[in-house]
Structures are given as C-alpha cells and as structure tokens.
Length: 411
Image 1 (tube, helix red, strand yellow):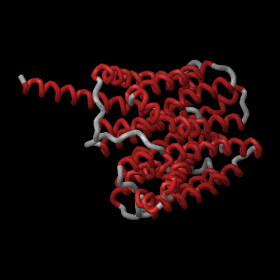
Image 2 (cartoon, rainbow, N blue to C red):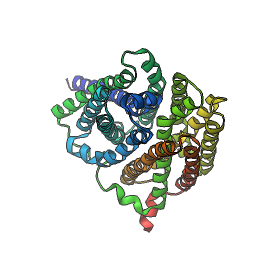
Image 3 (cartoon, rainbow, N blue to C red):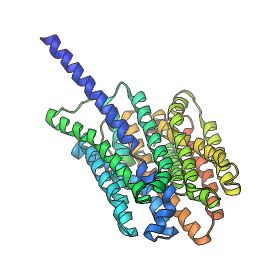
C-alpha cells in the first residue's frame, strides 16, 4: 500500500510539474503581444483614435513605464496572494485591459486600458521567474530557457501577425489588437487551476525556496549593479523603440505595412536563439565584454541602415538590430553570473528590471516627441545612435569579471 501511495504521489507531482511548465510557457508567450502588436498598426491606431505623434510616443513608452512601476510592487503582491494566485490575478487584469481597449474611440481610455494590460504583464515578468525558482529548483536552467524562448515567440508572432490581421479581419486594427486579449484569457486558465489547487492543498512554504523579501534597492551600493540596470534599461529602450516605431520607420521609407511588420517580427524572432546562446556565454566566458562591444556595433550599423537606406536592404538592417537584441538574454544571464548569494540574485533581478524598465520607458516617448517636432526620422535616429554608446559602456561595465556580492561587502 505504501508503495502504491508513493507511486500515486509521484505521478501527481509529475503531472503537476508538467502542468506548471505548460502554464509558464503559455503565459510567457502572452507577456509581450499586448505591446509588440501595436507598432505594425500604429498608423491605423493614430488615425482611428485621432492622436498625434506625441501621444503615440506616450503609448509606445507605456510598456516600459508600467513594467517598472508595477514590477516594483510585484514581489509584495506575490507575498500577499501567493505566486500562483498573483499570477492568475495578473492574467485576469491583463485580459480585461487587452479585450476592452479595442472598443474605445478616444485616446485617454485606450491609454488607461493599456496601462491595465501592461500592469498584469509587469507582475508576470517578475513573478514567473520566482515561480520557476520555487517549483523547478533542480531544472532551473532548462525551464528558464523555455520561459525566455516563449517570450521571444510571443513577441515575434504578434509583430508578424498584427498588420496582416488588420488588413483582412473585420474591425481592422481593433481585431488585430483584441485577439491578444483572447489569447491572454486562455493563458490565464492554467494559473487559475494552479491557484485553486494550491489553496486546497495549503502546501507549507518550502524553507529552502528563494525568499521574495528584502528591498530591491539594497544593491544600489554596487557599481556593477547600477551598470547592469543601465545596460538592461538601454537594451530595453532599444527593444521598445523598435516594437513601437521601427515598423513606421520602414513604412515611411517606402515599405508596405505587412512587410514592415514582418521585419519587426524578424528582430523579435532572433530572441529565440539568444535564449540558447547568451546564458552559455555568460556562464562559460570569463570576460564577455567583447561580446557587448560587438552587440553595440551591430546596433549602430542597423540604425544607420534604417536611416540611410531603409528600403534597400531592410532584411539586413532588421537582422543587425535583432542580433544586437541578444543583449536582453545576456543581461538576464549576467544577473545570475555576477552574483553568488541567491538573495543578492533576487534583489539584483528586481532592481535591474524595475530601474531598467523605468529607464527604458523614456526612449519611445522621446522618439515620438522628436518625430513630432521635426517631422522626420533623422533627429530620432541620431538620438538612438547616441544611446547605443551608453548601451555599450554600461554593458562593458556590467560584464566585467567580478561579483555584486563583493561590492556590497566592500561598501
């Protein structure tokens, strides 16, 4: 009997872990489309809602701003509701925002509902990795790869499908944006099941699990931590500028909406191989500063191509920008590679994401304002080229051998 019960217990645990992995992948796929689906149809949204370039810049800046603000309080929400409960609630909140915003006819409610959608995504950004650490302590690298790759798949698919859906579906851009609310609703169901299961089981906290407590600003005494936050912020800024404005740059350069959307999708798709490559580089290459320099050079080359010859070799420019975005996976990998103590790792992760996304939120807004003032892409692209310098310098400092823990001891 004892063996039978043990077997049933193992079967139940195994089934739960597979369900949890399914829930992680499905939610991760839906943590980006609410933002990345907007860029390819931004012109249609501007026309449909009657908004100017500055307001459009605010809209493209909202994901980074919301990820910073709501990501900073995500740990507290997780502590209060439990990880699965908080993630289920985050999915519900995001679903409401994504489903409702296509039905409004003015800018303000569209912006407010977008904030609601991005707030749920922000909580997911912070708490899904924490849930992975808690649930898969012995399979952390593999499950984190699933998570990172799923993020890239979601960003890629939404960028590529948004413009074609807008062109063929009833409702145009409204359908192209609203469909991701349906997808988020489906992704929330597994988390509701997990949350209900956890409440019924009332599983005691694992004393060996990473604790989601402590101030995320405790690591501010480390120069390496600050450099990593700036590096994460500048690469995030580049990513959300590209999600929000790159398609419009290509369209203004003479390309069609569908092709422009596919080009943005290409830049996002390159995040899939990044999920495999960058963690290995961060773990096995003692001094990866040269990698950061190469990524910075590719970023500059990509923007120069978009500026000088957008319709000549657009796939090349999109590829260069996409490879430069390997910096996202590298910055996440450095959080683990440049810390020893798990508590320092958790604090550094929260610090880099909150401060980094706050830093990145200004980029799309500045690009929108500059475009509105100058009626062209020359000045905005000069701004992006200058920011590539900060991207490289901060990345070199973050990738330098050494540990944040040592900085904190010396401080």
